[in-house]
Image (cartoon, rainbow, N blue to C red; front, side, top):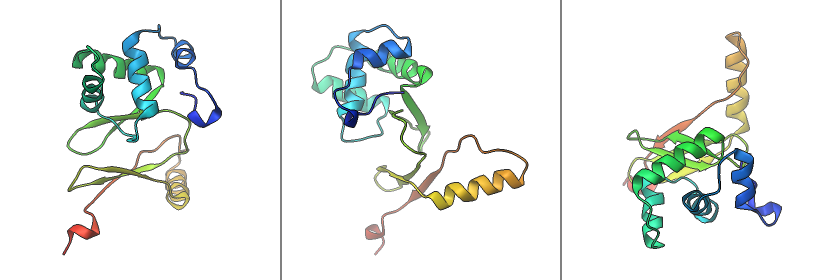
Length: 147
């Protein structure tokens, strides 16, 4: 898990050390992109485009490799959101949330609803299980597009 920015000065080196990964420039750059991006959900191609604008000389294969390592160690969470597009977000301990994907723009918005979580717990319990995790992705068209 990655330390949140609000907790004060965050040392990216420590996050990498805690995850068991060696500190390398590509890993530091990718982690920095996720920490500083206004967009919380980024695909590998998004990260690559940002690296290009920063004049970094890392290939797309390197980006995919770093993202896979970050997912395996728990620094990032991966979600499949529409069109089989994988997006990643920092695993910063944020409460469970769902994703709403715009079918017209591809924009991803997060939502949290305790009622949904409580209902899922009840459904799972009624089926004889304990809820350990869940993933909710909803798809919709903005109301402004309907007219």
